[in-house]
Image (cartoon, rainbow, N blue to C red; front, side, top):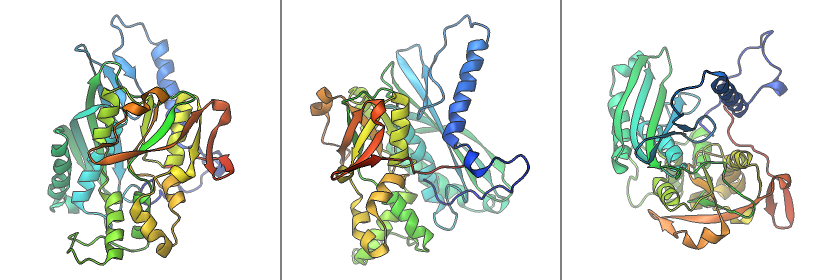
Length: 368
């Protein structure tokens, strides 16, 4: 899920009907098939391919000759689609632009190494402190994980800010965790808590704003403190790089994905790639404690936010039963929660709440 939604294109004679409009995931799947078909029809290369994983996961994987794989991921942030200029700051945007790509590398169980950032920026911001403040947030996060900025590009944009973030990571050969390794009987876990980013976005959409300097004081009103913490979950998300490294280096996870589109959608992505089903226990889903505090007063449903909200950038992963005892309790102070079990594909993806069990439909964020 992201801030705002794209405006509908004007109807034309070539526009698809609304019920025939393809989703971004259908587009990615068709592009993946097109790339595969072109590769198969191309003339044989004299060198074996170094591409281990292309389109379809959180990052591409390229095999190196020194016993390591390089992983590459790219994310696009577009003003008024993925963020609004009046609800964030350049510093938070710089943090988030890197964080979303670090989360993809973490979801592959790899260590982030290098980054590239490209900009489309309006002329009025070019002649301001916007980029200086953006890179202040970017470098503060990059320094925490030893990520080096190695390039990028900048161009003038007519009206809106566009940020393209690319991160390269590394892992040992065959240690990258993909979405396709889950098996029936594997247990499903998530890091941290869910729903905080979506709750923060709902408050921003209702006109609330994070103070220019937060925290203001130790005597801040508890309700304001709760709202401000939710704003930060959305505006300044924390990628679970440490957990990704542990799960990858110790070969603990059989499949993994980061929760960017929403739990309901991302567990479908994982299950589709693994060709399995899943049963998620509603009572086990870890709600962000600030969401629980504020939902009763703001008419928000913690379960719906956790299932469909997205942009929590937690890790959703599966573990074989025999490896569960090897899981650490916490990494970097962040715990994990078992929320369900992988099932055979014919059992679909289900949500259980008490004695009720029903299909868990993917209702997270869709760009189109």
